[in-house]
Image (cartoon, rainbow, N blue to C red; front, side, top):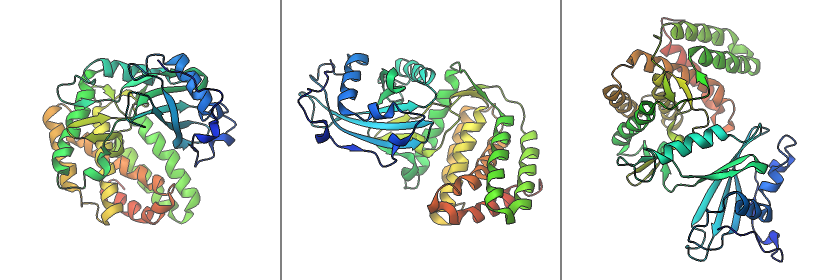
Length: 350
């Protein structure tokens, strides 16, 4: 079982890395406790008594804030030690949500882990192990899986075969047809684009007319997409949401799992690949063979999903990246090229 830290230990000797300054977040004051090594060990012992298993007494070695969206979400990495484990080999992730513990996401991952996405998965397509919840921190816990994200791996020589496997992974999620508490359709996609492009127009008023035309073309494109047979979809599927460890492939971050068109997932992934190609190589077609392998394998597995729908969602994803490029200083130089590329892809609709 887990044990609380000995009170005579100096908690300041345990490194806590907080590059985002999350303690200033007045909407999530509980983050102070989630970064306190003593509090963390107390809550682990209370809420996850089986986490230690046969390893012996668990203690916190380090705490690091990995990702943070002010007032909304925070991802914290805890590195733990135990007498019968190699030093620092147990690493868990705590997923915090500002508006309350995300029990639905935790239960979904539990269901997947206990089913066909667990350690006995014959195809080695899995999800990280869910470990428990810490309600006072509005947090649920999962293991941190080893490996690398597909972002870099797709650009390597084995990227084509990996793209096919990723198509198999998302198809496996779709065919599970698990119930979802939310739905997400074309109207939602277009609403998001309307909101995001309006923000771009505010910061780049000289592009206002062009952005209006792009948005109008997106509406026409959306109207052309046939109504789909909905299933459970990831809804935020892109290369960084896939971790590869040898023959194991893990799907991450199912927080936005919804009922929707399965074409959205594969189109979203393809759109991200186009953006990655443009950003990394200055050529939107640099990873085109990976995109083609992804889409063709998905089409083999899901012949009922129209390729035109996949292509439409890929274009809408690329349009969304116009806004996303303005949110990262290192991507600001890409915004103009993305706008031009989207105008090109929407030719005939503008």
